[in-house]
Image: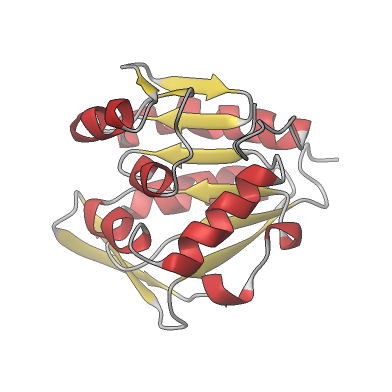
Amino acid sequence: MGALDGKRVAILATDGVEEVELTEPRKAVEDAGATTEIVSISTDAIQAMNSDISPSGVYPVDKVASQVSASDYDALIMPGGTVNADRLRMDQDVLKFVKDVFAAGKPVGVICHGPWTLVEADLVKGRTLTSFPSLRTDIRNAGGNPVDEEVVTDQGLVSSRNPGDLEAFCAKIVEEFAEGEHSVHPEGATA
């Protein structure tokens, strides 16, 4: 039996997603027994990238953010990619979905530029997390505590810096997702 048997995991992504940050965490949670769905801002297939500049695979979208609920999933993965993260953080349906996931205490794995959406959704205040270096000022300005570590866990929020951290990130999200829901902070972020 897998650690995530019966769990449903949303992967929030759009065009510009860093391919390996989509595929490796997806494989890790599926190998542990979870089912995954790609949630995006439209029903169009998404164009993944390598190192933000080289087009790679194209991935079908399962659901749009406006049509999903936090109750549909047990956990959320937020891969990076500069363009991906920038587009997601500007979508009101994405922000509502992410806020609802945090308010429900669901575990979240976020890597590289992914925390931009958390900053925009006002979900990093009082949290310790890591990210791609260029986001750390944004995290600090939003009230978060940015650190430079391979993987950081803050009560259900798992974060990593870049594709070089994927092995540790994937192992930690499987562990946190298996633990399930966490207690909820009064402001709505998991505590």
